Amino acid sequence: MTPTIRSFRPADAEAATAALRDGRPHLVTTPEAVAWQVAAQPHLRMLVAETGGRITGTARYGAYPDSDTPGHGFAGLHVVPGARGRGTGSALLRAVEAELAAAGVRHLHCWADDDPAAHAFAAARGYTRGRVGYFARRDLAAPLPAVPAAPPGAVLCTAADFLDDPRPLYLVDIEGTQDEPGDVGLADQAYDSWLTEIWQRPDFDRALTSVVVADGGPVAFSAAQTDGRGRYWSSFTTTRAAYRGRGLARLAKADSLHRARAAGFTEAFTHNDGSNAPMLAVNAWLGYERCAAEWKYTRELAD
Image (cartoon, rainbow, N blue to C red):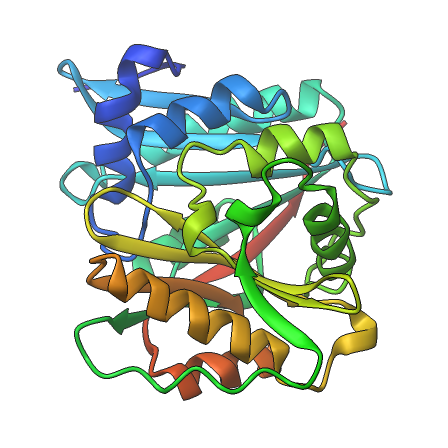
């Protein structure tokens, strides 16, 4: 049966989220978060593939909003395992490439699951494989390392303590983002955009986001997202440049995991670029075990 490719609708949220999760036990998301991302982020679009009245594939894509070099775009496609090999992925990719090319995107960056069929699919369509990213899982029922002692002058709190003014956390986030491994140079995200896309996410858990404060302000944090199903996602852990080398990322992430377990969460997941040795070392110390991988693919789109 030929799939129908169409734009995501808010009523698709439950089915689209189920499709995104299918075959990806490491993915932590919610229907509310999926619908919110499409509605609240003007640069993000989403297509669904519908076969026999069922959503069998998704594509999330757009132009990088903060790229300091124009013409770069991103895309993430997923076809549910039981519907592969029937042209769904090809139809989604053609639609995404056409829309992005029409919008001026010339350099398309995609992530593909670490699966032989996914690699073959990307290579057959002219995509070149690049960097790798690793997903890792932590059973929160197993003993956790103790939260390290905070260095002199540093204290732990949570993002919930910054409800009146989250801008200090924004400044830490922006500084950390500039040092994230990647292939696209990004300009600083505007504060209003950060409030909408990060701070106001429906799955952002402020009570589990641990923050290290020193010298009168936040200097490190470990941000958490949760799905209401006992699953916790570590979305970003970072430290301001002047405070690195003191174990503050480890401190924040360990504290956040302890808070998650105390709150009844049973599984923790995270993702890191394969070249991010410091954070991979922190995750290993915390007891995370690699559970999946994805690979970056790029292609130049025709004018």
